[in-house]
Image 1 (spheres, rainbow over the protein chains, first blue to last red):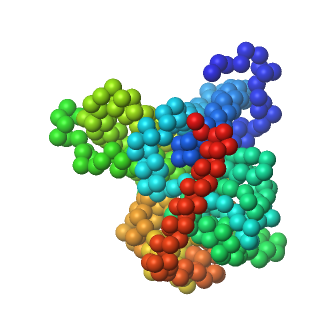
Image 2: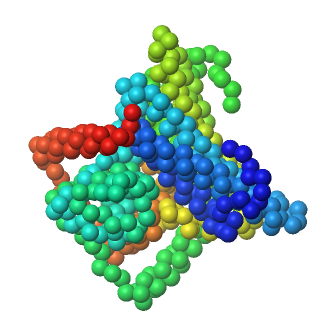
Image 3: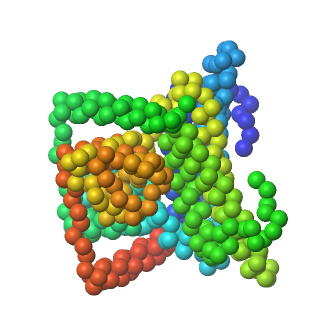
Length: 238
Length: 238
């Protein structure tokens, strides 16, 4: 882990600070899930992906620092923007911790006492599920299915004929015969297993008309504002 | 953060290593959600809870170390058990990072540029939702509703007449007028908002008979075993 010597080597330099921070937050969550999943399934290729994301996080952190330094002109700027760097650094440290977790793969599974038990007793569990031929999930994208919203299970990895994809996009299509690795509660994984096996039919949400959606968004915004005021009115916040 | 001088002061000494590790993993996930939620809603009381969990993590880490040292009799034991300490330490470092995140609360919200944007553009979002009078969620426990399995939203905090509860248990009952803070995808939070507002009726799962459950568990186990073999057979793992 060394700082790039030439600034033109810096990756992600075209991203805004906001985009960089968002990417770092998302990656810091994905990397921890993948790290535990690599232990659960003794997968060196998942561990490899963890290391890749960790390298990526270093690049993102450097790019964030560079952008923040560039835009910090006054003492006041510097004060505010230093807070941002703390969040970036927290996300980076989370990904370092994930990278330590996969270090455990150097021991064979039988020499990693308690780890499997820990993973199977934790609130959020990791499960491997196959999409069966008769499953109504097959042929649909992860985004269209809204797998996480409907089952609480986040898809960490998908295996199809071309191999494994880690942290798949919403546009990725699931096919019969694919295997997915998910993170979720027991209830959620049981529900997803029923859909994936074809025992239960997937219930697609009826598309909401744009007009309806807009009204509802505005209502949500208003409600959230009221709730926030209430929260702060109770002596909470500054 | 200092080591307790007298071992009888050590908390959690009655827990097994397995229980300690599981607790550390669960807490390291909850604490990050709470840290981001405290920024989102500028809540010093959530930040306070983050600090409490961080202190608890230190206690858990010491107890884990103590137990591991006690049970490490041979060179081989020591080698294996040192791996466990790495996982415990990773979970502890994640909670330290969460504690740094809440440090940002020393700036007022208007002096925390990009943070709200980051939180509203991330994959996993934080939302505040009120349980309306007509909601079919009211009067039921979080566990019975299986909120996470059915909406993908994890309830981070609940506010009722008695105040806030952070990281509520499955046995906690939701009532009309309660406010919940959740972490989930946009789709999931939209779905939960429909249930909470009473616009949509909650669909309770039909209880599965014990016999059926047992057969299904066995099938799941068999399937998972086959899948794991397949995963490892593909040159993955050691």
